Image (cartoon, rainbow, N blue to C red; front, side):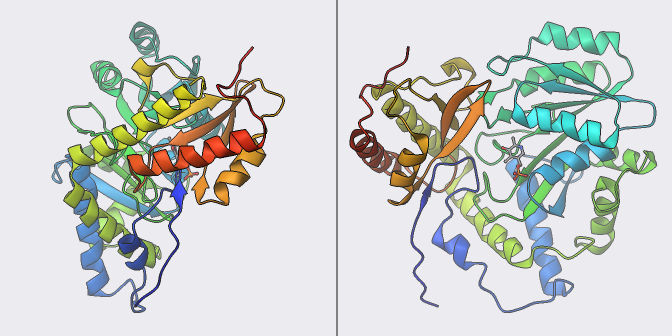
Amino acid sequence: MDVKVERKVLLNPGPATTTDTVKMAQIVPDICPREKEFVGIMREIEEGLLKIVHADPKEYAAVLFCGSGTINMDICLNSLLPEGKKILVINNGAYSSRGVEICNYYGLEHIDMKLPINQQPDLKEVEKVLQENPDIALVYITHHETGTGLLNPIREIGALVHRYGARFVVDTTSTYAMRPINIHEDNVDFCMASAQKGIMAMTGLSFIIGRRDAIEASAEYPKRSYYCNLYLQYQYFMEHGEMHFTPPVQVIYATRQALKEYFAEGEQAKWERHRKVFAAIRRNLTELGFHIFIPEEIQSELVAAALYPDDPNWDFGKVHDYCYERGFTIYPGKVEKKGMFRLCALGAITEQDIEDFFVVFREALTKYNVSIPVMYQ
Ligand SMILES: *Cc1c(COP(=O)(O)O)cnc(C)c1O
C-alpha cells in the first residue's frame, strides 16, 4: 500500500506524533479478535508492556482496557479499596484532582491532601498523614502532572507508603515509556498509561501494570463497577489470554508495532531524545523571554508550561492557528487563574522539529505585533 500521510508535529500533551510505520500497522485484513492469531498478539503486547517498566511477569501483570487513560485511574481507585479502608490522594495538580473527583463519584473514603501545584510534597507531611490514619490502604499520586510539568518523587514516597503497609498507585500516564521507570526499585505497586502517549501508538488502549498478589487480593473487595473492575479483567485474561470484551483491534496492531520501535530505539536513547527535545523547547522559550511555570529542579523534562505574556497583542488563539496551519499543534491551559500554554516533548519528534517550530512561532509573534522578548509586569 502506498499511502502518504502528511506529518504533523504535535506539541500537545498527547496523543503524540506517531511514525508512519505505526500508522500503517493499523491497516490489516479484518480479523475476529477471538482467533488464536490475535490472542498471540495480546500476549506479545502484555510482555512488552511489562518489560518497559522492568516488571517480572511472575510478580506483575499488565491488564488492558479499551478506553482513554482516565479509565485506568477510575479502575485502580474503584477496584483496589478494601471495605472500611481509606485512600490518600496526594494532590498537586489537575490529574490528581481528577483522582479525587473519581473518589467522590464512587463515594470512596479518602483524604484529599491538597498541595500547591508548583511544589513537590513534603515527605514529612505525607508521613504524618500516614501515621495519623492507619486505615489508609491505598496511596495515589501522579508521577508527572501533565498540566504543569511537575514531577513527583515517587521512589521516596513509595518507600514511605510501604513502611506504613499501604499500596502505592501511581498515574504514570505521562512518563511511562519516556522517563525510565523500574516498577520494583521505584516502590510502585500499580502504574498505568495509555497507548497514545509514551509508546507513541494510537488512542483507545489503556493498561494498568500491577502486582499480581494485590490484584488477586482485590477479588474480595467491594465491587463498584462491572466494566471497570480490575480483578474481573485480570482473571479473564489469565484464563483466556484476551480481553473480556471487544478489544480495539486496529489499535492493538499499532501498539505491537510501536513496542517494536520502542525496543529498537532503546529505553535510554529514547529518554535522551525526549530530554534533548525538551532542552530545545526550554532554550527557545527562554530566549524569547517566556517564563516557565515549574522550576527546573522539579521539572519532568517532558512538558513546559509557559505563562502568557502581559502584552495586549498576545492572543493565544491567533498564534495557535498560525502554527497549526503550518503543521505544529500547541496547547492552551489555565492554572490558578494564570493563562499558560504548553509545549510537550512527547512523541516521535526531534530537536530539529523544535527548531523548525520556533521559526514559525517567532513569525507568528512578529505578525501579531507581540514584542520580543515578551514582557511581563
Ligand atoms: C493523559 C493523561 C491521562 C489520561 O487522560 P485521557 O484524556 O483520559 O487520555 C491521565 N493522567 C495523566 C497524568 C495524563 O497525562
